[in-house]
Length: 123
Image (tube, rainbow, N blue to C red; front, side, top):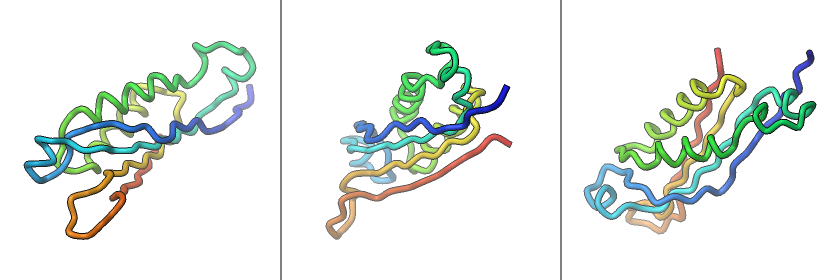
């Protein structure tokens, strides 16, 4: 059977979380925006119309939410946990990319967001 590779994206997930190196970030929290893009074989879902054969975006959102709720000093650490967990729990995912933006980071200048982007693929 041929593979039909494609992408599934979740964009603009907004979450309040408690990440940062400063005490006030860990105490008061802040707003984060998460975009996720996963690449996988969409053939089983496309040909069967069976939700159980699809990459479950509700499960993706749940992983993001659960990992974002674990306070960390660095957003990079949170992103790594999300990437690793998706690849370990979803064998049909071949590659995953994540963007996490910390809205209004604690800087001495006006800044809409500080953003990290990371990706991980199956070996």
